Image 1 (cartoon, rainbow, N blue to C red):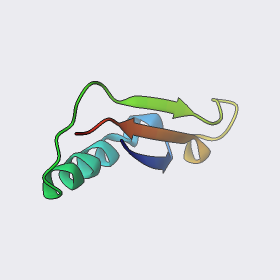
Image 2 (cartoon, rainbow, N blue to C red):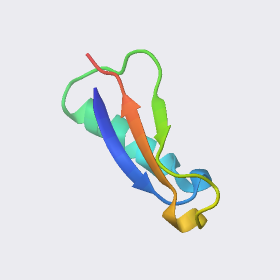
Image 3 (tube, rainbow, N blue to C red):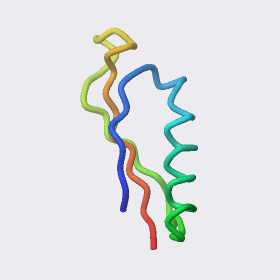
Length: 59
């Protein structure tokens, strides 16, 4: 698995997924299964401070 910690609005997280997918491709690996997101805070925080861990399984 690979993971990334992303801070910012959920609606702007797509570049994180693209960068992770590119890294997987560059390393000659393959994504498997589904991605997981773990939320470390909630919408009581400003959108700019939302913290999400994105996990992608690979083989």
